[in-house]
Length: 75
Image (cartoon, rainbow, N blue to C red):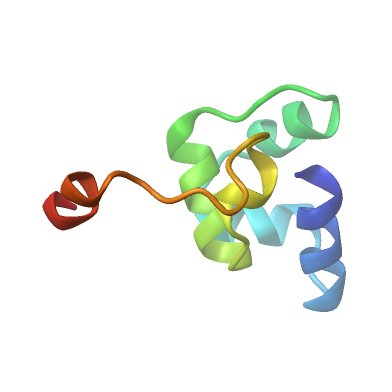
């Protein structure tokens, strides 16, 4: 996830501080992710939204799977 975020950051020519501000997360969140920690759900959602990355790409075993139809309808 960090490598993908870094690629998005570099493509936008932004610093990590810029990313934190644009995504609405603390800089410490990005620092922890760079050290291998997993972000909290709010931080993950904010960073996914900022980067336009898809969560499914970073969750093992979810590629190509669909939710149950009732879950999709409810959502």
